[in-house]
Amino acid sequence: MVFENLSNKLQDTFKRLRGMGKLSEKNIEESLREVRLALLEADVNFKVVKDFIATVKERSIGQEVLNSLTPGQQVIKIVYEELTKLMGEHEAPLKLADRPPTIVMLVGLQGAGKTSTAGKMAGLLKKQGRRPLLIAADIYRPAAIKQLQVLGGQLDIPVFSLEGADPVKIARQGVEYAIAYQRDLVIIDTAGRLHVNEELMNELKEIQARVNPHEILLVIDAMTGQDAVNVANSFQETLGLTGVILTKLDSDTRGGAALSVRAVTKAPIKYVGLGEKMENLEVFHPSRMASRVLGMGDVLTLIEKA
Amino acid sequence: SKTKNSLVTNLEGIFSSYQKIDEELFTELEDTLIMADVGVETTTYLTDQLRETVKQQKVSDPAQLKPLLIGLIRQVIEGAGRKQFNFDARDKVLLIVGVNGVGKTTTIAKLAARFSDHRRQVLLVAADTFRAAATEQLMQWGERIGVPVIHHQEGADPAAVVFDGMAAAQSRKSDLVIVDTAGRLHTKVNLMEELKKVRRIITQNIGGRQLETLLVLDATTGQNAVNQVKVFKEAVAIDGIVLTKLDGTAKGGVVLAIAHQFQIPIYLIGVGEKKEDLQEFDALAFTRALFE
Ligand SMILES: Nc1nc2c(ncn2[C@@H]2O[C@H](COP(=O)(O)OP(=O)(O)OP(=O)(O)O)[C@@H](O)[C@H]2O)c(=O)[nH]1
Ligand SMILES: Nc1nc2c(ncn2[C@@H]2O[C@H](COP(=O)(O)OP(=O)(O)OP(=O)(O)O)[C@@H](O)[C@H]2O)c(=O)[nH]1
Ligand SMILES: [Mg+2]
Ligand SMILES: [Mg+2]
Image (cartoon, rainbow over all chains, first blue to last red; front, side, top):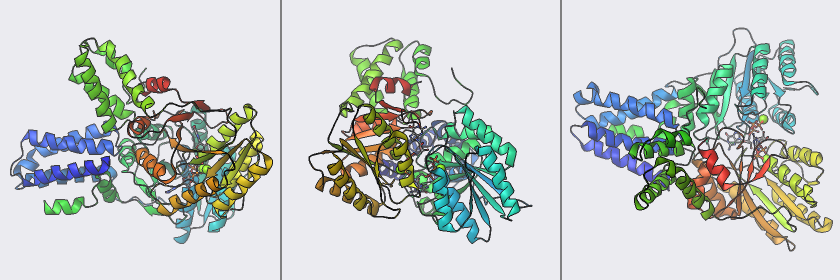
């Protein structure tokens, strides 16, 4: 398997570094070549990789390494630290409004996992004592409203929908409904759309203008390739994202998209989806993701051993 | 033209901005392929081949590289098998599989619509009994395009739905049966076992039909698509690939890596959400688009 090879190569590189007393610029460059390949094979965006490698190189060649007693260890540490930094370092909880209801809007490409995630988030926050309302604002996909209703039914959470209305009206009336019925958390499920579809992107902008959401979260498939940055960029520019949710992390993807999206939007990754069931949503841990992208579950132990 | 945020380099631009063929040019070609999701391994293979050809044929003009590279890519794609998808077929069962949300159900609607255009009697089988309102989704499509759908309740055994579907196809003398399955990650062993069972029920009740299994891949997927192909192929034998969502900005270059590793032809592409947004895969058009 390609991935295993890369991971092994990376381990070898790190081992070699570990054994070295003093690193030359050439040593560092050779090692970073392997890191670059591993990141690309993990689907981290090409441009993001380039910047990342430049940063690591600069730090490695600079004072830090030269003054360190074990320079090899230091380089590994820098790679890992910079990766974690790119991922956001800290967990990012959902922002709750001072005056309820907190309004959350989920957006993203087709099939990314918005509707499932709407259900999962509502379920999770209900367990934490909130009173959620789901709003079905996807009028395009066949049976999209029904899908959300089924999930709402499973979770015993109300779902607002409006036959024959446009998504802007549905969202607006849904929020009014939440206020009238004292629901303190509103999650709006929107239709999947391409980031280059101007008409549908404008529709999102209009929903945003009418309901003033506290959180606009981009739902993105963790298996996404190089295009993740273009997608994230467009949604960011159109809406100003407050966060990202990464789905389908229960796959065997390296998940480089996470790194790319985070680097491009600077929006924190708030949750990850780890399965199809409603309980399969967790808070995002930046350092775990850093290890995953590198294909090494035990980067930390490596650093310690180094 | 380059938009402000476009990270994609234009192949045309690469070839015209270089006076001579040098390492810098090869590096830029590599970067372009990587950015199209071709993957490190296949990209290296392609540029190594190109370097070799340049040396052997003593190519010196960068402009000559373009047809050479396009030729190499086509070789990789067509090396995986060339087969036109036959919309005039009768007596076939199409089993549609893939990971979650790639576009299986929508592709089925598109296939059914196209077969109907060719005056074929199609029967759809709603064997995704797991995802919320998956059956309703397929039924709404069936209604739109005027094709019957065999279905059970949510939570039913998918094998049982397929069994009924095969029996119904027999008594109705349907030309084609298309089976929708639940999205499943290739990493979930129990779900892959379930899929094997569905396939077994089909073959046991095939009634003179021919089974063809299509794997649906999302063009926005990165290198993970290679793993998807590998595991689905081992579990249920894949006859062809449908590459969806090519109407976005993703290039779907990972299918090159797939063609490089597996003998599975790409049949069709999805270019939108409507029933007519299905096209035959065209290796040349696909290759050109990699560099746009
Ligand atoms: N394995 C896994 N599957 C997921 C996850 N999140 C969503 N899915 C599945 O992905 C598929 C698509 O999910 P949806 O919630 O319908 O996606 P969507 O973004 O609402 O899709 P559209 O509304 O069509 O754009 C479904 O089969 C979900 O069950 C996840 O974290 N893990
Ligand atoms: N832009 C675009 N969207 C597509 C294409 N094919 C499917 N979609 C959309 O992708 C989303 C998911 O499609 P589905 O057909 O439900 O996917 P699926 O594989 O059946 O999903 P699960 O059954 O949940 O695994 C829907 O919003 C579709 O409209 C395509 O070629 N282009
Ligand atoms: Mg949805
Ligand atoms: Mg489906």
